[in-house]
Image (cartoon, rainbow, N blue to C red; front, side, top):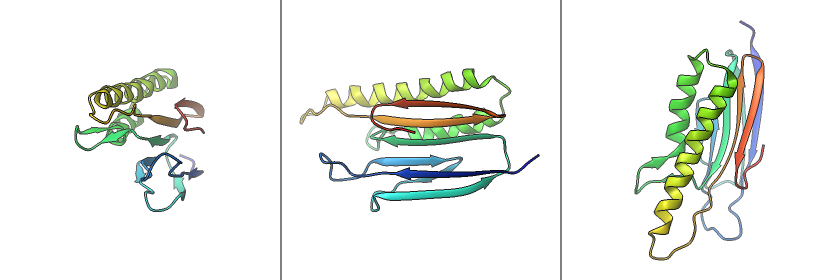
Length: 141
């Protein structure tokens, strides 16, 4: 198996309307929550031909236990052992993201100080030489 060198960079910022940076970076099994720093860079070498990189914003809620980063880790572990086509895996990834986003939006509707929760996600799936990307909201690849 060949070694694939992958370098991933993510730029995050708190934004004008927020006081805390809610971005989460998932880099092929590693998590980074750069709440203190506005910039994060990740560099790694991977020996596998199946990788997942993602940036999410506002996709966590400690009170309800909704965590896209937890779902991403489970999805990634399952996808690495799967022989399914990348299109099928991408559909599964999109389902996880949309489900978390919809649940978080529903929760925000019940808040007393109603502000619609703005969720965002960008992901890159690499699988046996194929690459697929997905985004929701303001995150970009």
